[in-house]
Image (cartoon, rainbow over all chains, first blue to last red; front, side):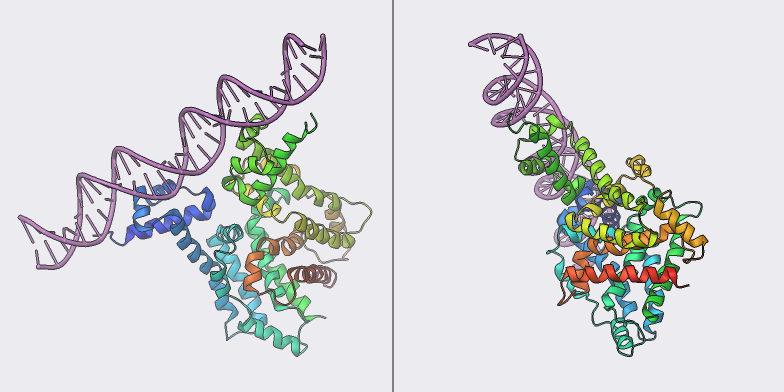
Length: 202
Length: 202
DNA sequence: TTTGTATTTAACCAAATGGTTAAACTATAT
DNA sequence: ATATAGTTTAACCATTTGGTTAAATACAAA
């Protein structure tokens, strides 16, 4: 068949899009089928049930959300200081590509904590190169003695949260003349400078 | 009747709890009724429909989420510098009381941006005392020239985001020996110090 | 007490939704 | 070509869910 392997994949991509946008509860099997351009029965043919389909989507989404960053955190050819803008840039760019991903992951993880706990625990951050580099720098009194997790969370918070709250910020803060892009560019710079200054000058 | 006014209120409180936890799509009218300890028909007697009930819940929730902070931002008897720990403390404590509120607001605002836009726009932050104080301090070269919105978002991000991502952080970062509370206490201090340092030393 | 009004309940309804099935269609190997 | 296995479709089904209704109950004013 010309489009043989495609049907299953079309379904998966459609499911990804719909689940990301509407969440598990908001998503309709019919909408996924329509988005994929196929009959609803195909969903159950390739993926047993809504739960199954969702499970696979979530797994991939989570790995995507967490996977890229671990690579950076374990990069050998860069100092901790060089990694900070890399992390910032990574999140900023992956959010532009996939703006719904973080909220999707956070939501479903929250409404079903225990179910996906195993998957989460596979990806702990403690033993990464980045963390080791920070600990060493702290021991050498090169930087302030802050828990590495705090540093990491500060970066992620500062970049990811504004995207989550975008509709709020746009209207409350009246991101004005300057557009959203400019606002986020400012932000990236600010977080970087602020964090470096805080770590190095103490 | 002894418990006269209470039925309507019991419904509302139950709706608040259930909607906060499960969102609009995940919430079931039956569950709200059960939580309130009344018959399902009462929901429609007092509040026409699910949409109506949800609308009222969202309105109150949003005002709660945004309202408290505006009071602080408009406080006259404090400097901008004194307001920063106040804002941090406000969010930290209101999150403990109501851990689901921010995610609830963010979610429903995202899936229905235009509908609640009006309500959002009522509460812009631009003309607050805090912002004016910051602008003045910038003009007097007392602090770095940063857009006040950036400062505000930095605070909110740093405190609120970790709560949203709590199930993630707890298992990825392995918030270890120290408990979550301690982690957040550390965080509050760090954000405060980091921000002040960044603003004043330039 | 009686009468009218607000409140509450149980039973019911229609639409939506996840899921199934049997038949039809396609392609490949023999 | 024919049998076989994989793929797709339309029609159908059972359950869930938001919503309705008519009768019953409590309550206050007359």
